[in-house]
Structure formats: C-alpha cells, structure tokens
Amino acid sequence: MKEVLLSIQIEALPEGGFLATSKELPGLVAQGRTVAETLEIAQDVAAGLVESYIEHGDELPPRLREATAPLGEAHIPVTIS
Figure (tube, helix red, strand yellow):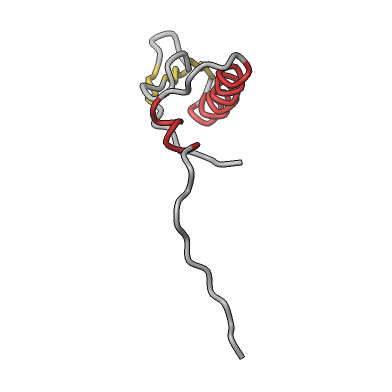
C-alpha cells in the first residue's frame, strides 16, 4: 500500500465552517466545522474516491498514477563477514 500527499485547498465559508477541494483529485469536496474536521473528512472522501476509481477500472488522476508506478531500483545494505 502506497501513500501520496494531495494538495488540498481550504476556504472559509461565509455561513461558517470550511470547504476543502483538490485540483489533484477531481470530485473531492469536503465540508466541516473546523479546519481539522474538514481535513479529516477530506481524507475519508479521497479514500472513497480512489476506491471507486479502482473498483470501476477507471484511470486514476495523474498525481495518483505517479504513486502507483513501479518503484524502480533501490539499494539495500548487506553485511559481509
């Protein structure tokens, strides 16, 4: 399981509370009473959207595709006695 950090835009609403959206994950819209609550809801919405993309066989948005790309070469330490 990989994780990716998404950019989230948060704005204060005139009637109170906050709204979170993301240009990197279209469809992500979350509203809460506080910034912390809004971010928590946004995280749940993002997870649900990604799950939906995968379940329906839809291509992930570019930012998320980067996170699912093969990792490539890595180096690990090995002790030789």
